[in-house]
Length: 136
Image (cartoon, rainbow, N blue to C red):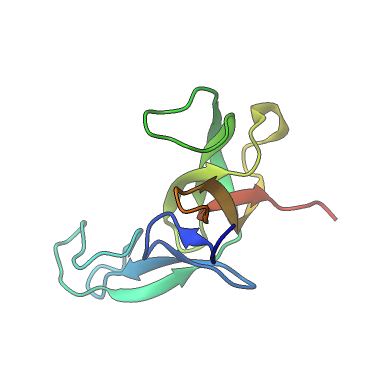
């Protein structure tokens, strides 16, 4: 790696000891919007307030992607799923687990920042993903 990690898209998440997704909450109807938006897609109100989503969340559905989509530069297979966060918003996103048999409906998931691929300058490109919460 030649420099610091590069986010796959600015404004989706913030990395740190406890990563967060960057979302909005409508000040009129209360809906949570991810990614952040300038207006509410539910009631058309302007200027929703910024909120951060951290989870943990609940896994609703999942699958494995076994063939790379056009333009994708990361490894396959990889998991994709729908995770509902405590704020009521369901996020479609990458999963750290690529084996569908290792996942169950209702499983608790935590937010992580993971490597996606290396860009042309040799920097690690990172994205958010949900990982199964380890059983204690």
